Image 1 (cartoon, rainbow, N blue to C red):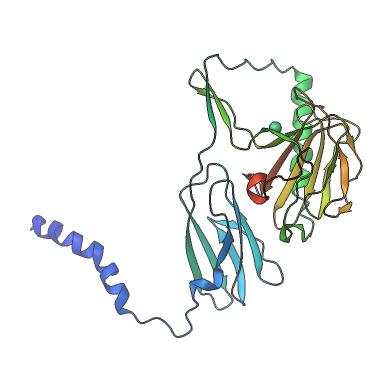
Image 2: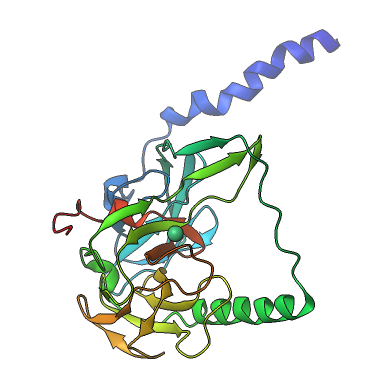
Length: 288
Ligand SMILES: [Zn+2]
């Protein structure tokens, strides 16, 4: 008796798959090409696409994705994004379009170091309190979500120079992984001007009081969840709420905060995912 039930199980499991091709597609079925993506579907990359007209909402692995009035959208994949992601559009009539994205892995630079990880400076109560306030400011800035079309533009380098640190690199200290580098570093002397890589709105400008780690921190929202953070500045020339245009001077390089020398650390995020600015840019050509 029981062996018969078990013998049937594989059939029961595969039968829906066998039956699927027999169902004729509905005449109004929307082709997957309606959500054709262009860009870099890989760890640290971004892609843009257009939803079919009548799309009510779009989700990437359960996270809501903004849709512009013309149907365009932007998605991004973090440094450690899984091999697959699911993009689901919900149409006004309740139908769903599902697209499974294959995310190419990236070989991040991993450095084995034969020294123990530097013990963290024991943070005193003042530090804890100050840091908590700084993190709250960053969180509040990210929640502003102003409207901007900067995400549609090709990005430009905020400054050119020697790249002294790449996105995603990580040190392993005697087998213990440190946190990975979340942006690209460009080494130039203090006072070198930096420009907006794309249009955007200033959401945070630590002009008077430098942050403990980021120093004089400037954050720009380019719309659709795409943000830039510029760290360690010596000077900030814009204020929160300012609309900046691509190429506009924002401030100057410095070494404020936790920094070992003058450089620009430029980090980018799509929503909460850290992405690699270098993947969105042409190779640097005007390096001095
Ligand atoms: Zn850096």
